[in-house]
Image (cartoon, rainbow, N blue to C red; front, side):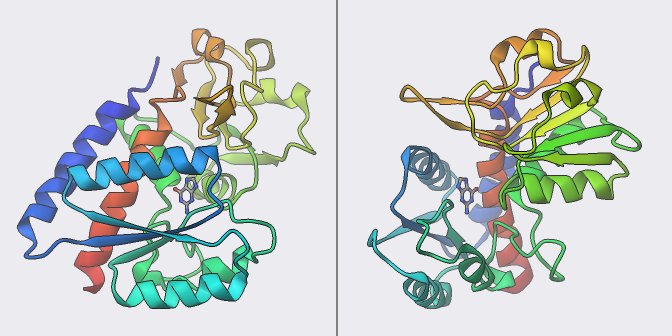
Length: 265
Ligand code: GUN
């Protein structure tokens, strides 16, 4: 079954829009970006469009390509004073220390939930929020399921693995380097955030597998997932790219912003 991410995002966004209407001011989300790549630009366009549609002011701050860590942390400090949320768009160029930057975002201004599991009051990271929405909608039971997480990134792999563990799953994490193809067939649920187009093919997975594909990357000018679309034919649940996890993640991010407004403003 194909997950209709746009429909799920649609009802989240409707609720966000209703909440925004009830406020007496326009909430503001600042997005800091540095040397944005193709995927980042796509995400930014989508975030801007969706934020505008629900009445949120999305303010993009683009830093010079040669910015260093302190430029980014200074910028965070400054924009945090005048925004309800601050999002540092990943990936960042290699001269910037990502962990230093991400810990500079105060928990009460962090709709990305980078401090989830580390600090009280952190938001659920949007990708995990998207997985959670889908799990609720389709009554997925994670307890004792064999889950393979591909990737260990801060946006997908790390938070998704802790979500699966918290829900009682048996979790194995592979990176591009440690990936063992033969193991993929043992998985009941695969969560992929590796960023390699159509890397997982039909013969690698078992029939009835549940696929959460959060690995959007560029393939010849279009957005492609980590999982080949033909896998949908054998999967019991499949999130396509585009139109699966991506739109829900953006909606969830905006929902998180409203949560910060409610909780901390
Ligand atoms: N890069 C791609 N998606 C995202 C996102 O949701 N948050 C951040 N911080 N960076 C991203």
